[in-house]
Length: 199
Image: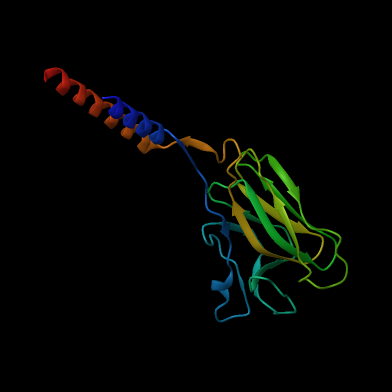
Protein backbone atom coordinates (compact mmCIF):
# COMPACT_ATOMS: atom_id res chain seq x y z
CA UNK A 1 0.00 0.00 0.00
CA UNK A 2 2.86 2.35 0.86
CA UNK A 3 4.39 1.86 -2.58
CA UNK A 4 1.05 2.63 -4.23
CA UNK A 5 0.67 5.85 -2.26
CA UNK A 6 4.25 6.84 -3.09
CA UNK A 7 3.67 6.28 -6.80
CA UNK A 8 0.45 8.29 -6.71
CA UNK A 9 2.21 11.11 -4.88
CA UNK A 10 4.90 11.29 -7.56
CA UNK A 11 2.30 11.21 -10.34
CA UNK A 12 0.30 14.02 -8.74
CA UNK A 13 3.38 16.16 -8.25
CA UNK A 14 4.44 15.70 -11.85
CA UNK A 15 0.95 16.48 -13.10
CA UNK A 16 0.86 19.73 -11.14
CA UNK A 17 4.23 21.02 -12.30
CA UNK A 18 3.96 24.39 -14.10
CA UNK A 19 4.72 24.62 -17.77
CA UNK A 20 6.09 27.59 -19.63
CA UNK A 21 3.80 29.51 -21.98
CA UNK A 22 5.96 31.02 -24.68
CA UNK A 23 5.23 32.14 -28.22
CA UNK A 24 7.85 31.14 -30.75
CA UNK A 25 9.85 34.10 -32.12
CA UNK A 26 8.64 35.33 -35.51
CA UNK A 27 11.00 37.01 -37.99
CA UNK A 28 9.27 38.75 -40.87
CA UNK A 29 10.52 37.42 -44.19
CA UNK A 30 9.92 39.64 -47.21
CA UNK A 31 11.54 37.31 -49.74
CA UNK A 32 8.18 35.89 -50.97
CA UNK A 33 7.29 39.37 -52.28
CA UNK A 34 10.46 39.51 -54.40
CA UNK A 35 10.41 36.28 -56.37
CA UNK A 36 10.23 37.97 -59.77
CA UNK A 37 10.73 41.67 -58.96
CA UNK A 38 13.43 43.82 -57.36
CA UNK A 39 11.02 45.66 -55.08
CA UNK A 40 7.36 45.52 -54.12
CA UNK A 41 4.98 47.22 -51.69
CA UNK A 42 4.31 45.30 -48.49
CA UNK A 43 0.61 44.37 -48.31
CA UNK A 44 -1.46 44.37 -45.15
CA UNK A 45 -1.90 41.94 -43.58
CA UNK A 46 1.41 40.22 -44.31
CA UNK A 47 2.51 37.03 -42.55
CA UNK A 48 -0.04 37.67 -39.81
CA UNK A 49 1.03 41.29 -39.17
CA UNK A 50 -0.65 44.54 -40.19
CA UNK A 51 1.32 47.23 -42.01
CA UNK A 52 0.38 50.88 -42.37
CA UNK A 53 2.29 53.69 -44.05
CA UNK A 54 4.48 53.83 -47.13
CA UNK A 55 6.63 50.72 -46.92
CA UNK A 56 8.38 48.77 -49.70
CA UNK A 57 10.45 45.58 -49.67
CA UNK A 58 13.74 45.59 -51.61
CA UNK A 59 15.99 42.80 -52.78
CA UNK A 60 19.54 42.46 -51.57
CA UNK A 61 21.96 44.77 -53.46
CA UNK A 62 19.13 46.66 -55.16
CA UNK A 63 20.08 50.36 -55.24
CA UNK A 64 23.15 49.41 -53.19
CA UNK A 65 21.02 48.16 -50.31
CA UNK A 66 22.73 45.17 -48.69
CA UNK A 67 20.87 43.13 -46.09
CA UNK A 68 21.56 40.03 -44.05
CA UNK A 69 18.34 38.24 -44.94
CA UNK A 70 18.27 39.20 -48.61
CA UNK A 71 15.35 41.59 -48.29
CA UNK A 72 14.56 44.69 -46.27
CA UNK A 73 11.78 47.19 -45.71
CA UNK A 74 12.63 50.61 -47.10
CA UNK A 75 10.75 53.81 -46.32
CA UNK A 76 11.02 57.58 -46.20
CA UNK A 77 8.21 58.16 -43.73
CA UNK A 78 6.54 56.75 -40.64
CA UNK A 79 5.19 53.22 -40.86
CA UNK A 80 3.63 50.92 -38.27
CA UNK A 81 3.55 47.16 -37.73
CA UNK A 82 0.55 45.80 -35.81
CA UNK A 83 0.88 42.35 -34.18
CA UNK A 84 -2.85 41.67 -34.76
CA UNK A 85 -3.56 40.09 -31.39
CA UNK A 86 -0.45 37.91 -31.19
CA UNK A 87 1.42 37.73 -27.86
CA UNK A 88 4.82 39.42 -27.94
CA UNK A 89 6.66 41.63 -25.46
CA UNK A 90 9.95 42.11 -27.33
CA UNK A 91 10.87 43.35 -30.80
CA UNK A 92 14.31 43.51 -32.41
CA UNK A 93 15.54 44.69 -35.78
CA UNK A 94 18.54 45.79 -37.80
CA UNK A 95 18.30 49.33 -39.10
CA UNK A 96 20.26 51.57 -41.40
CA UNK A 97 19.80 55.11 -42.69
CA UNK A 98 21.62 57.64 -44.83
CA UNK A 99 21.80 60.18 -41.99
CA UNK A 100 20.35 60.92 -38.61
CA UNK A 101 18.75 58.10 -36.65
CA UNK A 102 15.93 55.57 -36.64
CA UNK A 103 13.40 55.46 -33.81
CA UNK A 104 11.18 52.50 -33.05
CA UNK A 105 8.37 52.97 -30.53
CA UNK A 106 6.39 50.09 -29.01
CA UNK A 107 2.81 50.66 -27.82
CA UNK A 108 0.31 48.65 -25.80
CA UNK A 109 -3.28 48.01 -26.90
CA UNK A 110 -4.39 51.00 -24.77
CA UNK A 111 -2.01 53.27 -26.69
CA UNK A 112 0.50 53.62 -23.87
CA UNK A 113 4.12 53.92 -24.94
CA UNK A 114 6.04 50.90 -23.66
CA UNK A 115 9.45 52.02 -24.83
CA UNK A 116 11.43 53.43 -27.70
CA UNK A 117 14.91 53.32 -29.11
CA UNK A 118 16.92 52.71 -32.22
CA UNK A 119 20.30 52.92 -33.84
CA UNK A 120 21.72 56.40 -34.25
CA UNK A 121 24.88 58.25 -35.14
CA UNK A 122 24.79 57.52 -38.85
CA UNK A 123 26.86 59.58 -41.27
CA UNK A 124 27.35 59.17 -44.98
CA UNK A 125 25.24 57.14 -47.35
CA UNK A 126 25.47 53.35 -46.89
CA UNK A 127 21.99 52.14 -46.00
CA UNK A 128 23.59 48.76 -45.35
CA UNK A 129 25.52 50.15 -42.38
CA UNK A 130 22.96 48.51 -40.11
CA UNK A 131 22.92 48.42 -36.34
CA UNK A 132 20.90 46.09 -34.12
CA UNK A 133 18.26 47.30 -31.68
CA UNK A 134 16.05 45.42 -29.20
CA UNK A 135 13.02 46.81 -27.36
CA UNK A 136 11.59 44.75 -24.43
CA UNK A 137 10.96 42.74 -22.37
CA UNK A 138 7.90 44.74 -21.37
CA UNK A 139 5.47 43.86 -18.58
CA UNK A 140 2.65 44.53 -21.06
CA UNK A 141 2.20 42.89 -24.44
CA UNK A 142 3.05 44.86 -27.57
CA UNK A 143 0.13 45.92 -29.77
CA UNK A 144 2.04 47.80 -32.46
CA UNK A 145 5.47 49.26 -33.23
CA UNK A 146 6.04 52.49 -35.17
CA UNK A 147 9.24 53.20 -37.10
CA UNK A 148 10.40 56.64 -38.19
CA UNK A 149 13.65 58.36 -39.19
CA UNK A 150 14.91 61.73 -40.31
CA UNK A 151 16.01 60.34 -43.69
CA UNK A 152 15.33 57.37 -45.94
CA UNK A 153 15.89 54.23 -43.90
CA UNK A 154 15.87 50.45 -44.13
CA UNK A 155 14.77 47.85 -41.58
CA UNK A 156 15.83 44.21 -41.71
CA UNK A 157 15.39 41.08 -39.57
CA UNK A 158 12.30 42.34 -37.72
CA UNK A 159 11.75 39.75 -34.99
CA UNK A 160 8.93 39.61 -32.45
CA UNK A 161 9.30 37.34 -29.42
CA UNK A 162 7.88 36.63 -25.97
CA UNK A 163 10.14 36.38 -22.94
CA UNK A 164 9.58 33.68 -20.32
CA UNK A 165 10.26 35.93 -17.33
CA UNK A 166 7.71 38.66 -18.01
CA UNK A 167 4.75 38.71 -15.65
CA UNK A 168 1.50 38.83 -17.57
CA UNK A 169 3.12 37.98 -20.89
CA UNK A 170 5.00 34.76 -20.40
CA UNK A 171 5.57 32.75 -17.27
CA UNK A 172 4.35 29.55 -15.67
CA UNK A 173 0.79 28.36 -15.30
CA UNK A 174 -0.59 24.95 -14.29
CA UNK A 175 -0.95 22.58 -17.21
CA UNK A 176 -4.69 21.94 -17.84
CA UNK A 177 -4.14 18.22 -18.45
CA UNK A 178 -2.49 17.95 -15.04
CA UNK A 179 -5.77 18.42 -13.20
CA UNK A 180 -7.26 15.45 -15.05
CA UNK A 181 -4.31 13.28 -14.10
CA UNK A 182 -4.71 14.22 -10.43
CA UNK A 183 -8.40 13.31 -10.48
CA UNK A 184 -7.64 9.99 -12.17
CA UNK A 185 -4.94 9.16 -9.61
CA UNK A 186 -7.26 9.91 -6.69
CA UNK A 187 -10.04 7.82 -8.19
CA UNK A 188 -7.65 4.91 -8.61
CA UNK A 189 -6.47 5.21 -5.02
CA UNK A 190 -10.07 5.16 -3.79
CA UNK A 191 -10.93 2.08 -5.83
CA UNK A 192 -7.85 0.24 -4.55
CA UNK A 193 -8.70 1.09 -0.96
CA UNK A 194 -12.28 -0.21 -1.32
CA UNK A 195 -11.10 -3.53 -2.82
CA UNK A 196 -8.64 -4.05 0.03
CA UNK A 197 -11.35 -3.43 2.65
CA UNK A 198 -13.71 -5.97 1.02
CA UNK A 199 -10.95 -8.57 0.96
